[in-house]
Image 1 (cartoon, rainbow, N blue to C red):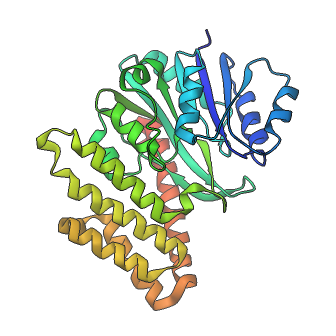
Image 2: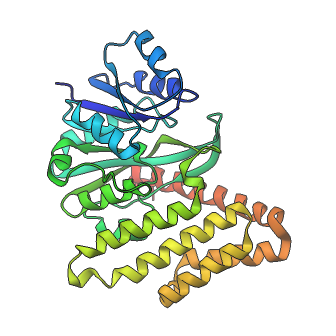
Image 3: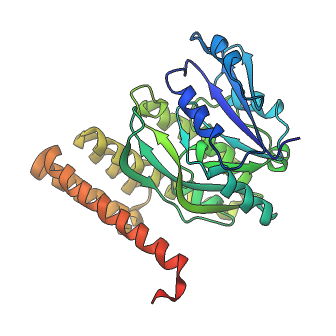
Length: 327
């Protein structure tokens, strides 16, 4: 048995898969196996895999069934005490597995540990955006309101958690990650390593570009979550939908579509009027105003300044945490 099993679902992913696998093989932690699940690809993955020299890497092939079934297949054919998921186009920093394994090994009460995530473009270059959440502990409520785990490639899970709650829901075409984390979060604590150790690739073929399917998928997951939620948690439903609409309003801002952004902003208010007091809603109003006043270019300048400022704050906060006696 190995300590960590790395599960990589792959569907026509040969443009990025060799680089993704290389980021695994360069890990400072070495007690792992890699299970690549070929989900009915039509590219040359079947010819490429046998050429790999590392005995820790295995290829399993199945008829195309989707990413959830591919991950479940990988889990079923793995032996690790801990499971790390990695999409075939994402990357890890060399110390990714080592830091996550060490954390789970020292904190047996924690079921999942995740890292911060930086965004990269289709060529692997950083695009100066970082997903940084501080959510830890029993985070079921937090998962409904914030994009805590921005990508499945940023988390390591104890196998016993999966044995307990089950694998990915194969009936979900979108937001299957969120459904998986929500089911674990009902019973187990989460922890975060506050470093951007995973890289989330943005490219034209990304599933997350299909906004309508994303919305329907998230709606299905929310309804599934609240269908089994305690009665005293149902008040969160409208808040969750308000945050969902705010998130899609920001995506519309990124697309330069001010009409759709305004529509989603208004829907957020209708779902939960008190959202208007949240900082993210106020920033959204400012963004829409700036786009109306200056167009896309004017707002892009303000957004770049805001992101640079937030990145400086993150770095400063991390230094304070590392040296508590600094002030």
